[in-house]
Image (cartoon, rainbow, N blue to C red; front, side, top):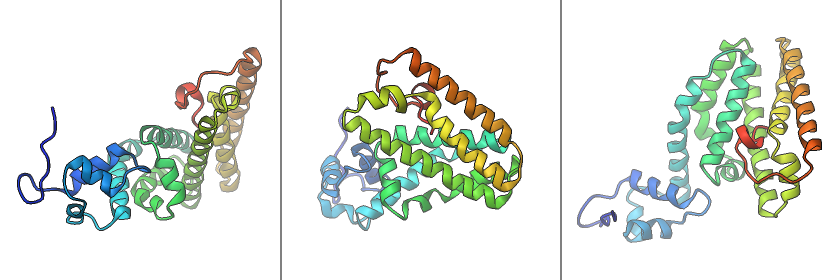
Length: 234
């Protein structure tokens, strides 16, 4: 069913939510105000009734994403190591679900601040799991940086047609998890919180498994970035 045009003078009033929905459908890194207005069938000038600029609209898009994903982060529980692993997975899922989000987070210094509630909720889970408050904040920051950087690297490899790298290394489920394990181990040592041996053992086992997987099948694997099937958590 085609959508009824939003006429700024006649018919349904243009809302901020309408503009955010449209921008998200066009893509975080690719939407333009002209494109959004065209999709909504209104003059570009009409958008300024509900937004101030493209950056304002981008912020509104990130706020929507943050609100929608917050329940998953609110549910984090268990040991702080388990919370850290799940937190990393949730971030990866968001990057997969919202193309361009990794680029926006890396290129816009203010973007992370929109997810302050997500980080705060995660820190509460880390603290409840036994990690001191200061280390919880550092860990949450390090993990999201690692996941975002890894996703961008994989995007670049795929764009360049680097199937050999995707198939043999970046597409291994153990690779990202091993990197996350190294971060977790470092924080455990810093905090004196214990658990480092557990994480190190898991990381070593993952690395060994990954090495066996690659040696047993030297052919490049299929492209794909789901951490559950393509080693998305780094």
